[in-house]
Image (cartoon, rainbow, N blue to C red; front, side, top):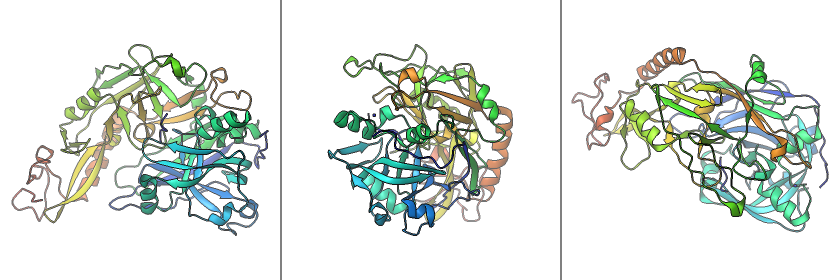
Length: 476
């Protein structure tokens, strides 16, 4: 989730070793909701809500540590590489915050994201536990007000109880406000506190997001702190991609420079829209024929330049859906998408390009597929676009925070970088797509002919069959 755009070291770590967490992503189909994910002994539980957020368990206070949830102090927060601040939605286990304190001087902040915002006061928790680490005096935003987006999100998805940003201190509104008000760094982000308290743990996190097809109830995966998922240790030998920053003094986000994009073997034009802003220190523009891409686990889709987006889905026989930003695409259509970063190229699995939907037309249920990628272009800051889970499932990604400078992350001399292993073989992925998508469609209502998706009476695709579709057309 992309935001719209330093106290002494008072942290204790329970573990002095790296941590590996098995995770599962639960797909929600038809209705909003979530399903708890399983966990290994000693690991944190994770789940996915509407394929938008990966959720982790957090607990507040020593009583939770000693007597499991005895004071109702457990929370499920979204893990987000696209932001850096920590906050809890109000109204959940409020008693757990009895020992939390609003800091002095009082700092009232607004945290704004691409969608949604929250307001509140900077506060500190005496003890926060996450993924086996106990964090003393962790700063967070004590939320006093949420906008309609987050209010509605909580109503639909009760397991969404706040956000844990995994980005740099330089992007943290809390950290920046504390530094400006006190000239101290006790407003640091969650991961900075964990790594600074335990120097034996390598300063990286890693995500593996698996894919098992359209109808699979769960996708297994891993979230790693300071280590690698079993079988993926070779990532340590891959190219170290320096995190791109357009700013003179530091790195704000997990940006990568994408130097190539091919659709069905044809090169697509890449031209950065990042504009220099000397007043704010933005002077480092991406090189010619490249764009800046934010790797964001808090976003489900991926965005590519508008012309490439049009080329991609029209090559698949797609038709723009009136009144939306989506294409309707034949469900068995494929395309080859290649993204190049430095000397590494990533193929995108066809299952990540379209999403199967069902809807009611004229009282009957029918199937159609829509674009999973979106059109994206520069909207400010130093990121041209965002690659969320629809791209990140195709790599095993390691986010290395680099060295800490005066106890903060995100400074250029700290040299943060990203490494990844490409996971998708184009030939094998195509075969997997054909098998998986055909199996999916066989169990769903008949498919609509996308050429008629905007008609008053859409027709069924010629390869669809249904005992209820005698006329071959659909009445809205």
